[in-house]
Length: 256
Image (cartoon, rainbow, N blue to C red; front, side, top):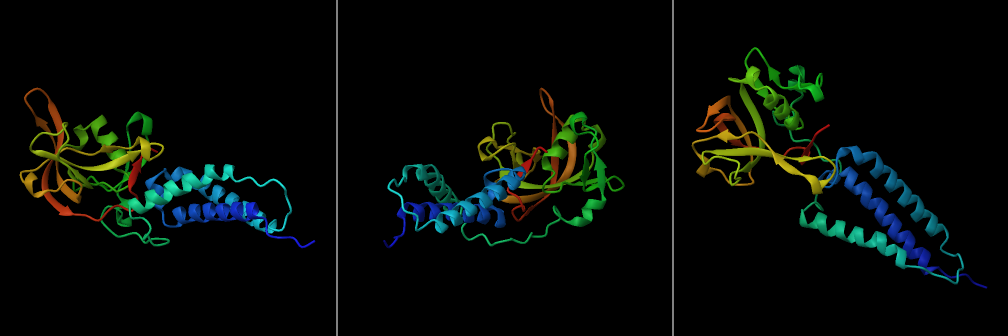
């Protein structure tokens, strides 16, 4: 008796291979960073390998005869894949090149790795940050260290007052936490996944707020001061320059 192709095996194999290749695409384009933290990278590799193996296994069993053909369980995988496809299309990630090259800026320049600073904040005590130039009283905040510099400076701002701070982020003007003469170049902090992100950044006092556009990426340079307000003091950057900036290599910053 001639064996025919088992359609259930064919569909399962195709879905498994698609899932495995999709996971690898997320990794190789670094698009996974828009959804989860880099800590999940080993799990993504593992998941991709498992799906690819299962896909190959199902194709090896294409001629297997069976009287029961189940498809319903594939919905548990097909639906998330469709949602992921729609999401990546919406965020215009489909055109992302494989192994994208880093775009050089002062905020990821390896030269600043030599200007190190050991954190004193108890939870992170001893952690090494970069871009710290004590002699010239300058702090260049590396694009992946925004959270840690904010924690360090806000924990005890006194040693850093008067320093020139250079940072980058996405312009926020409309926040209720900002005075009318301030904006903030913010980054999105992710603790676990995209569902728990929130914006962090320094308040920046600037006399040309009307020239800024909400959501634009900018590089800011200015002096760190403690501003005296009517009822309290607020740590601010008195802005000297605001310039256009490219998007960072990673869309989010992390607390580890």
